[in-house]
Amino acid sequence: MPDIKINVRNNDGTQTTLEAPTDMGLSLMEFLKGNDYDILATCGGMALCATCHVEVLKGYDTLPHITDDEHAMLDTLPNITNTSRLACQLKLADSMDGITVKIMGDGL
Image 1 (spheres, rainbow, N blue to C red):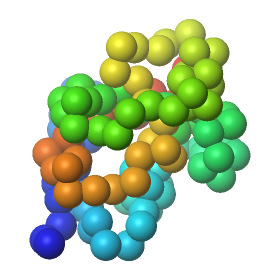
Image 2 (image 1 turned 180 degrees about the vertical axis):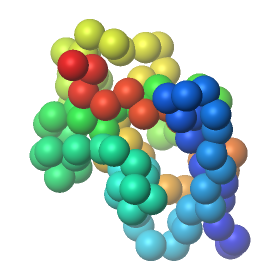
Image 3 (image 1 turned 60 degrees about the vertical axis):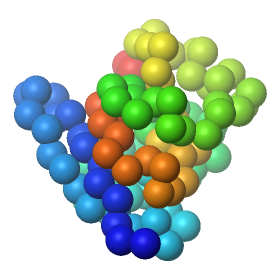
């Protein structure tokens, strides 16, 4: 399967489209960090810090269901949205082709 496209809405309102491999077992967090996006990922992808918080602007319904642990961590954030997810909990998959995310960070 060819790479998928991940769209990132930048803070200045522009959008960057990145090609992401689905055959390496990467999370969205790891992929974004690898593309020099400013994500702290303090807990290393364990859904314990929410520094990889993203708002899914397009394609939310294509993502796997949110886990109780992920929801509990997101629920602590002041800037949570109806389509918030933790990028560390989203493994890159073919079904994510074309999603658009905005990096929200830790909300602080």
